Length: 228
View 1 (cartoon, helix red, strand yellow):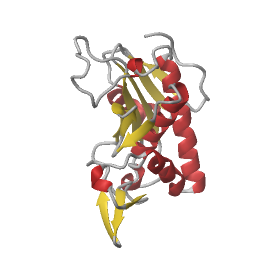
View 2 (cartoon, one colour):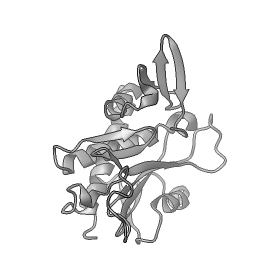
View 3 (cartoon, one colour):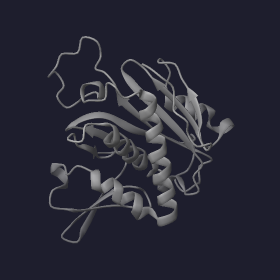
């Protein structure tokens, strides 16, 4: 895997990791000391990972929607770099889908023991993208999963993908802060796939929890971030 990160705004503090490390775990371990803007990332032979430490002002229940912002930012970044004819969508709650197959996911981490109604000292959001299939993978064995190298991204430096994700994420969070939750929610819902269990429902996101709200005949059902 080639290259580092291109220049980023000073709000970010990039931290390159080795291919055997875990960006989420490293971000959570360092968050109390390093604070907001820390950006551990890695480019391994099989995957790209990046995590960003945030310092939310909302209670944890509402801040969990940062998971959706992270997934939406990844989709936006891939849409810029990928072939224009390949669709980039999201699958509830935070899987990233390229050309109809899962290419990665967003993740979230919070301080252990933080109550849902409490404001966390920090929050970690991040992404894990499949770069190549594992060695020995047989084509067609898992048609529901793909990898960036097989979808026209082979010439895109992994660092460019990470940097683009970070920029899109910060732009999305800034819009959320200035224009309200609806701005972020609209960006997510625009890319969210309509799965069979959603058919016939009006879709929305609950600003209090980030849950997917499906309305049928005046009755709302909530699908939390923790479950598909």
